[in-house]
Image (cartoon, rainbow, N blue to C red; front, side):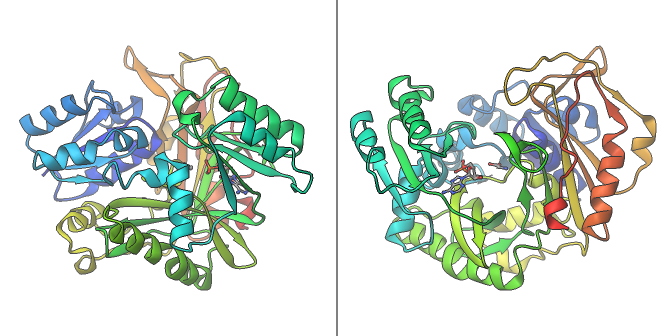
Length: 426
Ligand code: AMP
Ligand code: GLY
């Protein structure tokens, strides 16, 4: 079959890689893809279509016998791509617009968790600056407080305020200066959760679900979790903080109630569900839901799947998820993100990239491109996060060491990466 993958990051490069390996797949189209997917050749073809050009994507799928579409990024989900494709009779993996509110509206997701008694941080909702300021002014508030714009903000909509002044500044940024536009029309202020973060992904048909291996992201720019939040600087899986006992609690208290609650309320959740967790003394609570796979976590969880990933996706749309294998390698994986100097703030692009030729011969190592483009046949930088370099190993330590060995073979002016990816897991 022909498949269509929507998005342009390292996550979508990894999805292309997984799709290409499936014996069922003839052609993998990726819209718009990146420099890495352009270099793949074989079954993979980049399309000059934006991830948000829904009508153009549907027309392409119609005219090119696309049998399965996989949505990587959140914007097309919020715009209703799943509803559009389904109404035209096309098979697509993802949640409807109503179900994607678990990510696109923090207000919806917090109220949903409250309705279904799913553990999460205590919260208040605000629709104007005056009421938010009055709340922040209360002497009994304990800091840090977490202040979140409700809508989609590309991972930038969360402020961890360590005192009242920072909380007031966040309220000014969101309500007065409208730095997130309409996405900041509603604000959630919530309790700061202690513990270790982890990401658990499920693939679901609305009732049945299959679990990926639990992963841990590294959101801060600097070693030792210091500095600004980023889209994610590296990840590893499986994350030992999610023991089998913790995973059982996550399934009982979070995953099953979430799927049942969404179905009961009339918008069954289909596709990938990302459950962002805080785990404190073995007790999980939800930090956030996302309506898609994580980036960079995808770059470690997909290479650890042993069975045919596309067969599982097809089963999820056929309602036969319990009939297909969803087996994992008994290995660990680590991915290290290489970014442009200055990221997550201002950075330069168009830096020529040199990759040592011996990388190609390294087994179980994968270079997933994020912000790259091809200029006159040569890769150049084209974004903040440039590569996500994954390696598998028999142990977490081995996978980390192997990933860093590959990282050293990639160079461009200003290349930056964290040197402690996975250290928490050791
Ligand atoms: P979100 O976009 O909701 O995932 O938030 C981004 C990051 O902010 C999370 O990955 C956490 O590191 C942090 N964060 C968000 N909410 C909380 C919370 N209630 N307590 C502690 N940290 C949080
Ligand atoms: N890795 C965080 C995210 O994908 O939202």
